[in-house]
Length: 275
Image 1 (cartoon, rainbow, N blue to C red):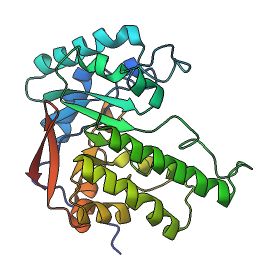
Image 2 (cartoon, rainbow, N blue to C red):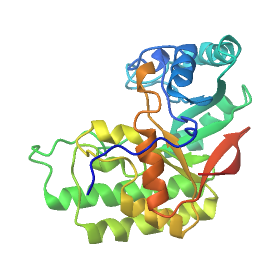
Image 3 (cartoon, one colour):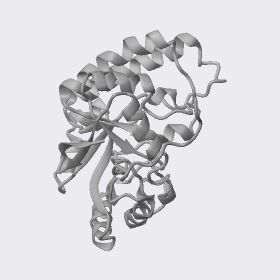
């Protein structure tokens, strides 16, 4: 198999997963990401900082609730400051049943006109367990994956989000159950995503992680195409220079899996565009 990088498409798709300094584990402001997007050949990005939690138990890894008005202001300012780049207003919202019950996301979204809401599952040992941890037994890894995809199914069933972020996140450190088990647990979640009319991102940050593979895997991309689930593209950039990282390869992977269109969002409405 050739190791040559994929040829860039005529134009790159929007980068719909970026983080700013307000999430407190990234750098740069929305305008910095917009300028970097133009340099990378993009004309659209979405700012999607992590949803702030009330009484946050981990205040160093996501936006503070008191910074949310500043976040809205910064995104709108970037759209005006960098006129060549469309800057969409979004959020990455961690799906937690307690926050759903409190209608926390609803109250945040009511404060502005949002373009896209990424749904993700972070709360739990789904992304930071090291392969050399004694707890990382084959049985525990399989149970971890099954728990994650059950929560992902609940995320889709909630109808609160527009797209799924880094859908196979449990592989982040390189931990995977047998392929047959992955198929068994992923397909019901994809059926729920398809029923909800959601998109799923190809998140290129997995290439930098122990997974050494984009989220989603080639198998998941193929299963998505079989179900008519559209793709969108996110770098999960935590620095402006990471915008559109490996996007030509991501587009090539989507096409190889059978995708002919991609999703775009405006005002939380999905549009299909040729890939």
